[in-house]
Amino acid sequence: MSKRNVVFLVIGILLMVLGVLVGLTSGWDTPVRYNELVAVASFDPGEITSVRAETGDLELRIYSGYDEPLEVNVYGMSSKRVRAELENGVLTVRQTEDNSLLRAFQSDGYVVLWLPDELTGEIKASTESGDIFVNGLGNVGLAMALATSSGEVSVYDSVFVSFSASTASGDIFLGDVDAPDGLIANSSSGYVSLSGIRCAGASARTSSGDISLSDVRGESVQAESASGWLGISDVRAAEVTLTSVSGDVSVWQGDAESLSVKTSSGSVDLELEGRREDYTVHMTTSSGSVSGVQPGGDGDRILTVSTSSGSINVSFTE
Image (tube, rainbow, N blue to C red):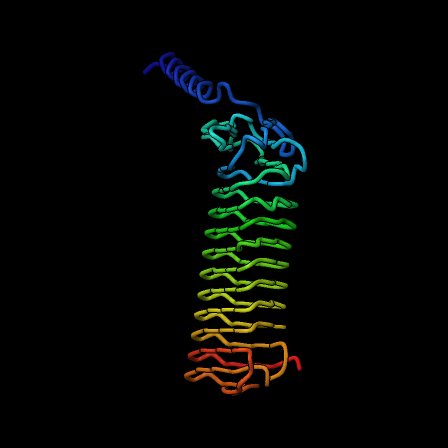
């Protein structure tokens, strides 16, 4: 092949590549800054019965909008990547597909939902890898369900009718949350932390992650982990159930009418409110050591501890 033909071939290939690039990127926005507001949509809360948000790899933030209309704000990426539509009372906020080559050069952005206090109904929000952050909601009429695959869920200073959060590998942090009808926090391998919780029933579960509960009040409290540590502090409930396979269980200032602790090989260390005389103790262990208390008693409070090979240590505040 002559040099002239080689030159023409190279030019032809370059033109083809340029045409593909133009086709892929045509119509897409140029890169924007992370905190740059690029789209706003407003909706009348009186027309909304439920909200569905699916933001994929984008971070989702949900705040109180007080008396203002419900707003959807999009920051830091092309506004074409997020759609907000209201149909038959259901507001859907969804991340759209983006195959643009420019997407690789854009900064990550986020979506903000401003929920007015008068809004009631069900809020379902999910992401793939984006974090979910909720703060300051006082909507007593809201039932909220959050889910993410690898993102983190953080909820603070909020009130709901009921609340649930689930992740595959992301952590869950809940602080100062009221949910009269119940609260659920589940993760496969993430860390779960509940603090300042007020609800009828609280449940925290994880397969391999640790669980920390502090300042929790409710009729019933449940915490379960296969191999993670359970750390319980200042939990007051009629019934508390703690379950672990190989992880340790530690309780400080435990105050329950009925406390049940079960683990296979993890150690159990309990500091309980009141005196030994207040408790009826049921205890089972195969090979683990026991200190601080022996089975028996006729107190009104019930303590049940079961372990195969882990040690058991129990103390009382009085």
